Amino acid sequence: MVSGISTGGDGPGEGLGIRLVDAPVARRDDPRARKGVVDHVSPGTTIKRRLEVFNSSAHPMHVSLYAAAADIDHRAFVFAPDRTPNELSSWTTVTPSEIDVAPGHTRMAWFTIRVPRDAWRGERYAVIWAQTTAEPDARHNVGLASRAGIRVYLDIGPGGEPPSDMSIDRLTPERDAGGRPTLVAQVRNTGGRALDLSGSLSLSEGPGGLRAGPYPAQLGVALRPGDTGRLTVVMDPRLPDGPWKADLVVQSGLVKRTVSATVVFPRTGVGRPVTMSAGPLPFVALLAGVIGLAATGLVVRRRRAVSPHDSRRA
Image 1: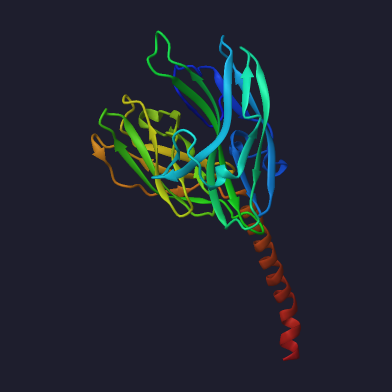
Image 2: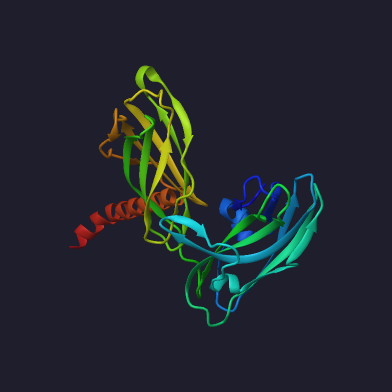
């Protein structure tokens, strides 16, 4: 599979793919870290990891490997054209930089990121690209380039990694111009790392006891720390207006939030925001609450046990 980003459509690179082979042990359970580089390092750190480039087409490919600039702009992860550099890409090298990949074969490569000792605190973005190019021929008047890439989210700073977190602040039923019911979640990045949002919506307790879904949320929403964005779930236009019990899950990596609400989809336009209830608390939070209650109960029992003695002494 192509990891992260691909461009070029049915061009010369159809069948070109790249994937990350290595991931830090501490991030093995993070789905984002399996598809891209999501890391936190101190200034002066060097990262070296393996890439696999593959050619699933019936034609040999000459592939260039390089890093180029990317950013999060208008709540989307965007990549710069061609080999446009930025600070992070200038720290990144790929070895070898040129490879030939036979049809149905793979080749290994290494990328290295050398973070300067005087690098300033903050998160930076780039893409590591595999690119193949076809020269002009009888069918094409201009050369065609296709590329597939792996996203890099690298946070730099001393000490531990800033926490990742989010909140779902609003849930609004709508109906789009094509007549399809949609549910729009307003999501805020309340943590210290960028988020790539995904999600799913399940409907139950509908008219006549109907159930529907799960429906996937539209992808492509990326939030910098402090940003707020819209995550949209689009459903079948034949779906009854409701009321429905809606259970929405929003996720970025290991961060997951769940809310429930009763929704009625409007006949047209935008409905009113609905009242939400939060999903189950994370296990760690529940455990902390149980420990806190147990400690409180212990204190109360101790006070009750010693109070007769204290009153006699008084």
